[in-house]
Length: 254
Image (cartoon, rainbow, N blue to C red):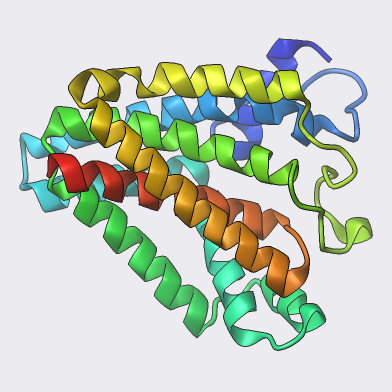
């Protein structure tokens, strides 16, 4: 499979954009192999959200503009990561055994824990964006969406899959990202944070610190409660990093 096909797989999986399916037989590890391009996809999502933020700020106040920017990223991804975030908190909050937690996480219905966590998630991202200037917000969105989408791949190298492999919608549990793939993803992240670094390097550093801290806490919580990760947990980790990063940037620039 060519690198362009890997990139198309990443776009097709992580967004709702209509992307032509790859030709020929699809490898069982296609999702793991395309994760190296997830930060690049994140750059595109962050840019689109930032563009909405810039335009909306000319028409409405900062809060409404921030709401529309966050809504844009949710719409572009079909709430992929938000869904995993909510399912993770539903399972971790409502289950008392590993089996029960995994069963709750697979339930398509949202529960109290998931609803509360998702509401707080969206509110924090909006609040963080609302205190930034439009150009700061755009740079922060590009950096946050790219860096957050690199986090799940690193978690996959540290934890084992804890769900039912036979029931997986996509196969990635039996393969892990390679070192060269992680390095390529890191290059995309470094490119994505460059505009924000030119605005404030300390803000990037503090945002990355908080993002890593929240993502690591969720990963450790998952290891303790279910023994590893699932697709929902990876989505939750992406969201945790994004929240932490935006809060860190807002703390120094807001």
